[in-house]
Image (cartoon, rainbow over the protein chains, first blue to last red):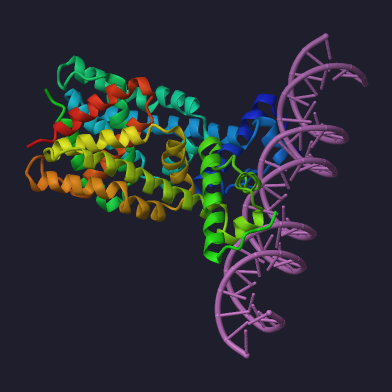
Length: 194
Length: 194
DNA sequence: TTTAGAAACATACTGGTTGTACGTAACAAT
DNA sequence: ATTGTTACGTACAACCAGTATGTTTCTAAA
């Protein structure tokens, strides 16, 4: 079969995409440690040479996966948020959290973002990604709520981090207990009302 | 030098201790992934043969380290708790949290318990250890607070998990922001009051 | 107190994995 | 066409986890 002529950028993007997709699949299913580069390359239909041409090492590939997964997650949440009509700032926080929990129902996504990423990536790098995506929305939400005098005046970033921690933990709860977690989270957030 | 005669149990305990201590040092400093068994054995002053005689694999050694670290953590917290005189159940939760945060100021401990353990160990095993130590205390505290009608009636275990998540996140905050985190946590818990 | 057996190690080896060096093919520019 | 550059493929070296096997130390019974 004759290889069709492609521009370098097309070639590059295609194999990068194949690699990231394959890696995401395997990282999600097996975890970072149990996933090896031969398997990733095979799943992507390329050789390890291609992998190490596009990514410095296995960790760099993982970081690319994490970045994309965060972007997809943010997309899912924002999509859900735009469907809602403007509620109060406290309700917005709770509903945003619900959207987050819904988007986190994929076990692979949990494995990558909540379990492996903190262990594999440098703290700084993960924080930076977080700041650009999920946490950013939360900080804005908390800020708005405080500005509207809807919740107590507390340090914004720490409070946002804590709410983030609540949702992260709830996301890892067994599905049948999710409702109880949501109930408690609602109570915790509502307790912040002025 | 003549090897003094030791009982098997003494030999066994001594090398197990040396291995766990050495492993704890290296896991704390380098993380699980970057720590290799030759380094652990060298640091412990034994060979890898001894390591694999006492532990099934690297992961089993790590789990032993986690178990001990959790025990030490619980010990530190309980010691601090007994120094306090009996406060109200809500104050008890907050002060218990402060003791936890104080005991978590060791970066190696954070690395092992909060970063690596969730990624390395099976969920079930880690949950089981948690249930025996830190979380157990929290569940009791939450239970007592609800029984005393000091906080709202919410599902105990989920709420305890969520509070645990709060403290875990706060423990990972930069030292200079710890005060802000504690302030927000206090507000969140106090907001649960009936 | 010798001796058989078991437990506690040490040594040697194997398979697998990561990262690199180097070679080749595809595209780009002149 | 050719020359350089980017995208890959192949071969290799280092390392590491785990195992198999040998050796030493302790235990206990004869």
